Image (tube, rainbow, N blue to C red; front, side):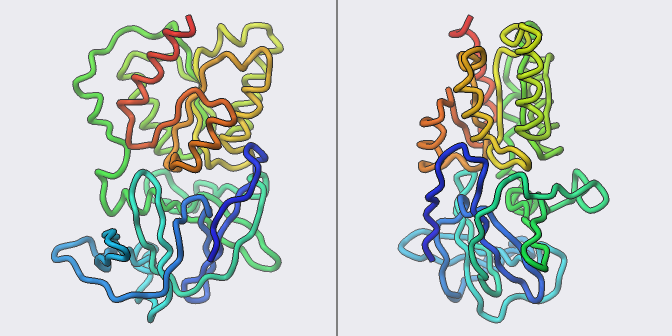
Length: 300
């Protein structure tokens, strides 16, 4: 299946691949997908996590296969099914599913954010729900699924253990991140590095509204010295936020960093085209602090 993204950058749209596990329908951002393969036998790994089926090697690349039934707390696994090969956070992972239904182009505005009753900070694995015709398609949090299986693939908070903090409270940072868990980890890390004045927003729209509020008051460059944004967010995504910020005469000079699991080569090109000043993958939290330091210092 062709998974090339043909969308213009910054339109606030994404393509979602709908797939099935039994009678349930789920979704994944096409930007995470490298390819889709028919089932192939896998080699089990001793003492692996219960959700890991094993490994296989298409074209000399070793890929871990994850059983989504197990990750979602359901018994069984696909009879044969398909492997959705993904790439995010610099990892190649295959997710074993029953079938692929199709690709849908949707706006981030159409994605309903699950509330805390079904998506608590520590254990929710859904980032949103889309209504397609007469059914609901649940978009899964694949980063959380992988980090639950292998915690070392998440944010490397230990990168800052040897960091010598200094007072950076005079440099306010605006953050757009929809994951409560990641938002807390990012803010904890930035505070550890001395950045204590943080303006945290749950999506790109909230962040943009805040920037517009500061602009209207005539002090946007005093209120925000750096913008950090995720890419995948409901209502408004990070690429749309980047496009708006970098085409606004009063805001465009504020350094903007895209900090996302989706920073692969294709997405980097999109971010560069939109004017992002730096782009980092989420495990690189230590590099994030270094990038903020350099950009703020160069912008003084």
